[in-house]
Image (cartoon, rainbow, N blue to C red; front, side, top):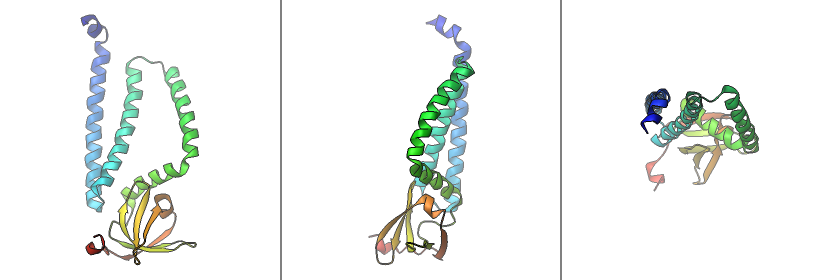
Length: 177
């Protein structure tokens, strides 16, 4: 067993350093995202969702760097990644609207000018909507119309349509019960 540690001492130390650096980077990014979320008035659940996206991205980067640490050849890694990306690319093309909504959700977290409780009007030619934002999720906005109807509106469409702020903080707490 001691032969194993002496043989791979450099790789083991490099792996621990990689893990520590990535944990520190993840902590810094998650704290920054939560501060941005708190400052912009978004829910903690949305900040946690963005934190999960960051964690998945950092894990993928860690796997790539770890492959180099363990001595994988760049041509082998490019072969594996090109094969994986080809399969993932075909799969994502098949479900492009889901990916589009997730991407829009991330964009909305950082730059959406409206928050939960605001009354907005979506200028859609086919189905104009005037409602109060009840929740902003990863895939859609949950809107409550004046007549009580619940409308889910996809995130990618909300970024494509003109939106007017009708009333700030229009959510009535008694309507939730």
